[in-house]
Image (cartoon, rainbow, N blue to C red; front, top):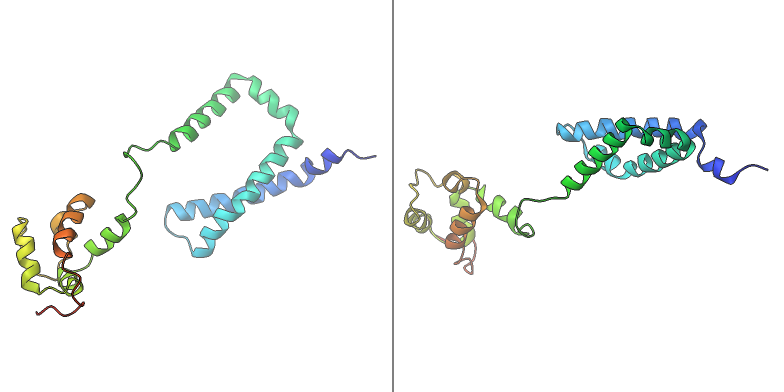
Length: 177
């Protein structure tokens, strides 16, 4: 009678499965890191990483005695502790509170030319130029994006957009040039 546990924790297939899943996850992870990925790479990395976890668990199960021996040594203990600390640190966030869900929209609006913001808000180009001048910005061209004046900070971008867009109850494009 065969041991049912040995079917799940078998070196014959667990080690090759772990190797293949690690290669897939490692290569797609490097591609993601360097922004060389395709949508299918990202999908494979995210979903097939579950295969890596399953294979790793089976590999550890098949080699459990050796695994325990590694954990009895200072090097094994140190490595596990170090990666445990890295994992814990990865959950830490310096920012106070949750991220602003409007941030992506604010960054997108800040990247379009002021002339487009004028059109979206229903204001004339001159009105938008006056608003920006009132905030202390010198406008050379309304073809410059808002972020060139405010910088990358979301707070200044939000303040400028709040002044430019409150009149957006007008129909877009109704502003005069």
